[in-house]
Amino acid sequence: MIDPQNIVRAIASHATWKYRLRQAIATGTSEWTVPGVRVDDQCDFGVWLRSLSKVEQLSEHWKTVQARHREFHRAAADVLELALAGRGSEATEAIAPHSHFADVSKNLTLAMMAWKEDVTTNAGG
Image: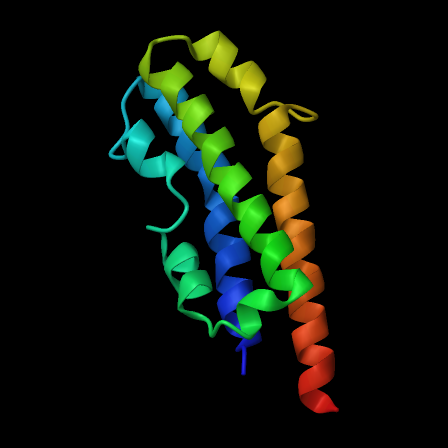
């Protein structure tokens, strides 16, 4: 059974990425590397997603969240790459409202919230 708190933690964790990226833009440095951010199976949530049973991985929620999670990491890596290359104004535009990163981030959060709601509703039934 899926613990909805894993999804809640992932929502919070991925929300901090905008802050981390803004810091990288401001300083031109980051403790993360572009290749490390680009992969989606190294963060706690990515590890958890892949640890779920094959049956759970067949669910539409899992497939949607996994695809959007992968896209999120790629978008975050693209922004980080700009920041680390000293292209701060481009990186700032890349995380602005209605940017690709903002849309991807919002879509991932919405997918995780829908999954959490479904898990929570079905756990009580």
